[in-house]
Length: 459
Ligand code: SAH
Ligand code: SF4
Ligand code: F3S
Image 1 (spheres, rainbow, N blue to C red):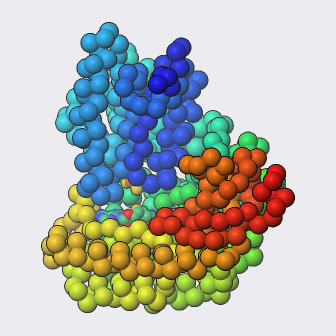
Image 2 (cartoon, rainbow, N blue to C red):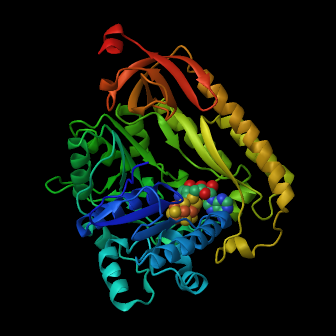
Image 3 (cartoon, rainbow, N blue to C red):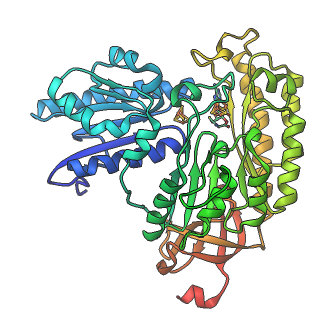
């Protein structure tokens, strides 16, 4: 096998855990390091710098970091023996939450950098080289971070674009408000500039991301008078950029789903008919204890309004089972809500007690085996709904954005408007563009289809 690392210059290996925000941040870190001569390595072996971009959301996610650090300790020693040096950096939400604990538990770590401080990575690397001690930077300076991020290189026809960071909702189970700080919206001009640059590089679909993306609010762009804009206005504005054919946004909070955004979903064709709108639980008692700020009925009514505006919308959600105090009746209410709404896809988790969150100190923690049972029941219902949704597409003609070659020669893989993976026999020339596909079958994790027109198939 050929060594994928550049022969000249240095190499950085970045491992990403957690949500889309981290995926975006990892890309940006690679972009920041490029001018310093770092090429991206495919494996950590022998890399000059290894960055773990970490997630703190559940205990398992956080613990993974320490086991990975154990493995890296050996690689670092191997490199030292060979006369080289490997620096190890921990970035992301575990860095923010457990900074000093990380360097105490894992002395092989040279740098700890929080999610709002990584734009200073070049300085930190220089400092770590000079001082040879641990370097820690977990300041919150989101505005500065956005300003310091240079233009980026697109990879493929789809891209994430951060428009909002942080969270003020303080759900009682969640660490995000502590690891990512308060809600901050990026300004329209900066977002438009990034979207234009992505479009110029062939990006057709942008996904606007934020912990609570629909809490985004900002002044209109320079030269436009009027009130503050919400996410609906931002989406309509971005839809006018040449080359941008599809817009998505994630993750939304039910409390911030305003009329402007619902109207935009109904009227703006470039907004894809797919909405991730987590509800977490179906019992009002549990929703209250979670501090979600709405009832199950409010959520169901909201979905009705969204469906009235955009009848073809498909929904996805997040669920937690076994939150403290959740009885079997409360859990049944979650199943009932899932039944009422009908999801195209969903993520579901066992409640994980997170240090420093109010939920961790609550009485009536639910036993682990009970959580296992509830999760299995919920997942089986959600899986049935997902399969039914996929099967319902058979016979439909869906516009598919082709993203990459498939496993077989002559096959491409793309995305439907509903984020389903679609496998199609299609010419390479269609990579990066949207074509109509007739859906002919489903596999466990994807749809299979054929190009609609002979001209396209022969193109
Ligand atoms: N901001 C988003 C999601 C953030 S985290 C929102 O408000 O929906 C992604 C998902 O992880 C959450 O929706 C929740 O379902 C899950 N999650 C968060 N904290 C958790 C915990 N302590 N235990 C289990 N799941 C959790
Ligand atoms: Fe966490 Fe709740 Fe904020 Fe989502 S809204 S990030 S679940 S505190
Ligand atoms: Fe994890 Fe942080 Fe995202 S805790 S889910 S990486 S915001």
